Structure formats: C-alpha cells, structure tokens
Image 1: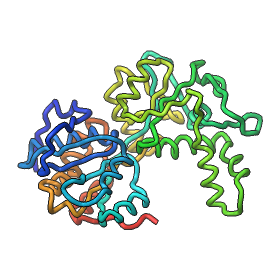
Image 2 (image 1 turned 135 degrees about the vertical axis):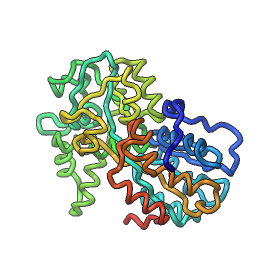
Image 3 (image 1 turned 60 degrees about the horizontal axis):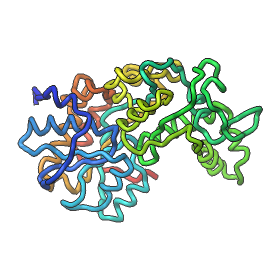
Image 4 (image 1 turned 180 degrees about the vertical axis):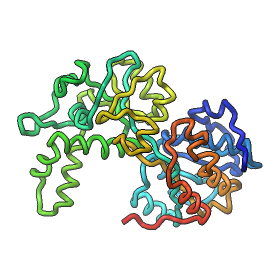
Length: 351
C-alpha cells in the first residue's frame, strides 16, 4: 500500500465507542486504555482502506483484556488483547486451560509514563525517590522504616513545591500500574534506602525470595488519601486533577501530549519526557506497548490477518506514520516484528 487515507477526524479520536450490534465479521479488540487510541486510529484507517468492516475496539485495562482473550476460542470471544504491559505466564496458562493454545505477541512501539499537574501550577522536578516518599506506606527516617506521614512535597525534598501531596495513580487493573510499581516505586524504594531495610528484615535464606518480599513491601502504598488509585482511563485521572489542582496525575506520554493545554509535565531524573528522550533511552520511565493475537482466529475472522499486518506496517507504526504523530515512539526493531507477524510466530512459555 503506497498511500494510506487518514482522515483528520481519525487522528483526533482518543476513544472508539463500541456500541451495539457487533457483527462477527468484525475484528474484536479489547484491553489497555493506553493502547486504545492507537488501536482506534488503525481500526478507522483499516475500515477506510480495506474491504472489511471497521474493527470494534474497546478499552477496560490490560489485565482485563488479556483475561477476555483467554476465555476461549470461537466467535463469541475476542480476537486481540491490547496491553501496556507484557502478558504473564499466568495469563498464558489461563489461555491454554481454555483452549487458546497459541498466542502471538506483537510489540509495536514504546510509550512513557509521565507525572503531570495542572498547567497553571508550579513546576516539579521529580526523582523516583520523591514519588516513593510521597505515596509509600513506609518511608525511611533517621535510618529506620516508619509510617509515612508526609503531607507536602517539600517536607522530604526542599527543591519541590510546598504543595499538599495527592497522587492519582493507575489502579491495579491497568498495565500502567505494573510499570509504575516496577520503574518508579521499587526503583524509588531502592533510591531512598527503604528496600535495603526491607531486605534486611525479610526472613529466610533464599535471596530471591527475600528480594521478592522486599519488593512487595516497597509497593504497599499509603491509604490515608494522599495516594488515590484510579480504576478508569486517563480521562478520569484528568477530570480528578481538574477538580483538585494540587493533584499529580500519572499518564501515558501520548495522552499528555494531546492535553498540553491542561497539563504541565514534570521531569524525572532531570529528563523531560518526549518521544526523543524515550527513543534515546534517556527518560527512565518508559515501556513497550503490545497487542496479543489469538492465532486460531487468523484464518477464521474476516480481516484479522490483514488488520494485524496493517497495524505494524511502516505506513501506520513507522516513524512517519499516524501513530507517531499521535505520540507513539516507533520501535527501532519494527522490521523484526513485521517478519514475526508474517510468519505467525507464536509465543513460547515465559518461564
């Protein structure tokens, strides 16, 4: 395909309403709210450029989408799960138990997780340690672990504003939460010295088990209202932030880039989150984006094979395509993904 029609309205879409009357000649996609706008753009362009119905795309969260994909094989089950975190072995085991014996993993690009406040508020220059000190259940004071009673950012970092702490974090159903825990909270826990104290207190002689226990303690967050889990998508986080100008919201980079009139982004480790800083590996909180395909449906559901190939084409996912225009950081190994899709390469076990 040498020319892809992309209407202006498509590039403006951030969600596709998947309403009534799903005909099963439609590809069905569900999952991550982060991947949702990219999948929507591809679905609309696919409907404009191919002789197949426009795929039906829904959100709901990465974990929920993977669970739906793993419910079984057949026209009453979805074809694709979008995910902002990698599928787990537990997911694959659930798939296999329900007859979904082959799943194809498709990595199509990268995104960053950003921390943003009201556009008219003060500037924030965060470290992962700052975020840990803001939301963790226990923090280090005078060399010991104590319950977190910080109320303002400036209490533990005088370079941060004297503003009340309120972090709107992704809920546990979202793939963003996994990356938030791993790349921000656990890293910050180590940065502040809390991880070493948790590790020292862990029982047993198995170092791996003790490390897992310490990580688990690190990711226990305070429940006094200073950290609020958001179970909806980024639009809900934005609405909550607009209702409380002190809030710091956790967003995907592309969502922030499309809402710069409302949000001011903070730096992380002195690095401004941009597509360039993520592509260069300089911004410390980034993650790959995936979708997972039920291979048993590829020759059964009309347009599924073509949709998957179209999604990862240079026309869509390349550095000059519409997904990059929306905020995707193009995968430098996209050609390898295209080859794997063409070969229908299924995943092997993860452990």
